[in-house]
Image (cartoon, rainbow, N blue to C red):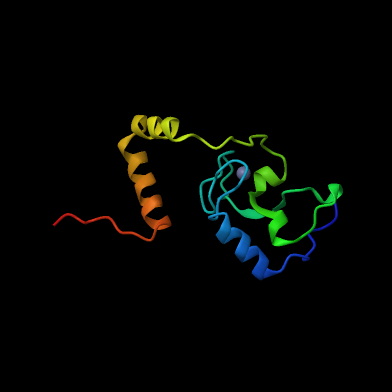
Length: 119
Ligand SMILES: [Zn+2]
């Protein structure tokens, strides 16, 4: 494996990360999450190619997506299908209150909102 080549500009990286919501497009973890594989690192995102370079893909922003280092290294083989709304809501309703709060905080941050504090 050749060392990581800096052929992708900082601007392109930033644009792709922003477009993908700083979320791994394969397994759904977000930058800064605890590593789901249990190492003590937090999740880092890297650039992945949608169409592999060996199949003619290039480094254009349209062919790039945010992928976590675990997925990029093939450490986990979970290209999750997007959850549908009914199942997603069912999962959330069954989650613990703490997890629901964590989700709420993440959503508020994502949409630049603030929760109404207690009066
Ligand atoms: Zn991933």
